[in-house]
Image 1 (cartoon, rainbow, N blue to C red):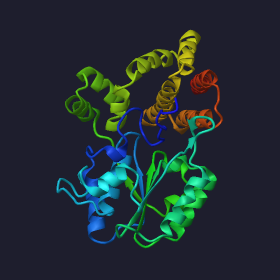
Image 2: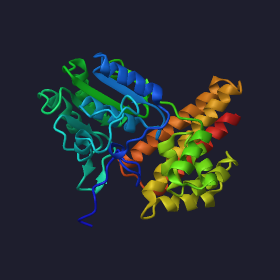
Image 3: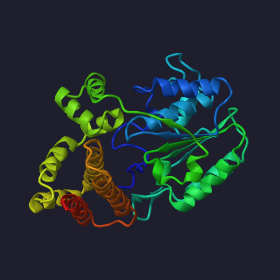
Length: 348
């Protein structure tokens, strides 16, 4: 409908956008590092914030942006600024003149988000940093997620990193650092956020959000302890989807074609896009877990390499399914074929 809100690429499902979130779970040391750097006048011009999906990277970036742009600290933590602060309100409205957000744009013609951050989006950064700050001493740009930039977009952003502006701060939210060019990674200070233990995450889900204890435990396990991802999974059909997947994958290299077909049909339904994304995420993690198990079990680099390659192929397929608008059913069948072939290769 005409009055439907435009989807935001950096928002997880129906959860609050990170610019509207004011609490951060389990990253006290990272906040201390960034807070001290800012307070002592040694703030690096570019930070690459990495970690698992849903661990709090974007929330951290927005907290740092509020503080750097002049938000008054509440004293609860080095980067804590309250929602009533003028800076907070301006950032929530995306109306602060000294702030720029770069993310995957919405394609109005197709009615979908673009699968990549385009060069036109990245070119906004050099123009933004060429101007003087209006309301604060600093200018801040968040790129979320930076690993979603295509090659031309990454090259355009590199120009800003090569000639960093005075009191200009670039915050790169990164899910997969390996997808970024070395020329970008080498010019950033890396800050890695780690997920909490699943038990702690489950307790947070149950107490903070009132999630049933058993569902909280399952979602925390599925998310690897990443609180934001666990919360998103708890508000979806992910537990049921994961149970179905486990049943299919435990028989590899044999596949239950009927069960795969049912899942493929789900991805083609009206609300199937969310199912497809969650499915691809689970399958990619499965491949990486198999690779890790092979290494830890002393089974050799060759066997682990089979599953690493499968994980990479699944990640590429997931990107192409959005970039090229591939048929969701075909994408699902192709994903399971990748895992089937990896399991067959492992036995040879």
